[in-house]
Image (tube, rainbow, N blue to C red; front, top):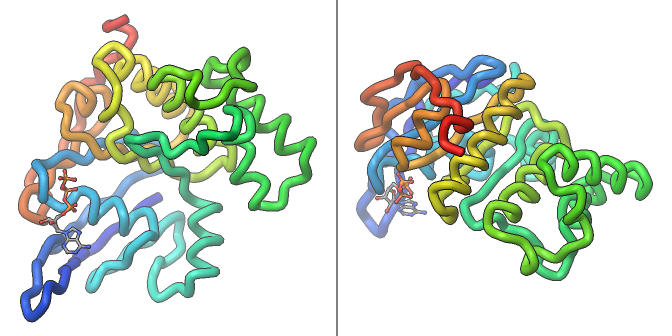
Length: 233
Ligand SMILES: Nc1ncnc2c1ncn2[C@@H]1O[C@H](COP(=O)(O)OP(=O)(O)OP(=O)(O)O)[C@@H](O)[C@H]1O
């Protein structure tokens, strides 16, 4: 699903240049659940931004579902991004004045899906994350865990090939984090490819593979004996 070869990325700062990614190689197969770990400044967000087509590498190649991602104009990049990728953020990024249902339906509106179809679809995904009864509530009326479930439903509604999650449990308490991870594990069980950036080892242990970054290179990449979140609840 994802092939990354010898990826390099530097940031220019005045006359200096900060070499952040120093030759990253890794592949992700369809249906994997992978966590990317590493200390602050190791390059996790830089890598996730490149995977999310929000930034481009200086050198190396990135192929997503067989498509080489390079030198795309913004319109084509946006089309591929919508088609291939769903995003989940630490801070949920919901629109406060829209209901849970409207938040999930909004990306479908931008994809020009007819109203009835997009509302039915949004409701289906809210049901899937266990929030059917909360569909008309505003984000301010939901708990942190419920907000992240809405954000997950929104990411799933476009049926992307890959979900990219940047610290998805970073704003949640431990019990809620495990519940959200249980949901993510369930979505992965249905075949979705998922990559999670996290600095929490117990969250990484709930994925199937941990990739460790340090100073812009991968220092470790191993499969894990997955801990099922249901053991915690
Ligand atoms: N747009 C930018 N311009 C200049 N330097 C940047 C930029 N973005 C990131 N950096 C620098 O690149 C390095 C890697 O940053 P990155 O955000 O990828 O790390 P990270 O592993 O995600 O860290 P954290 O866990 O703190 O989010 C850091 O030293 C950071 O200051």
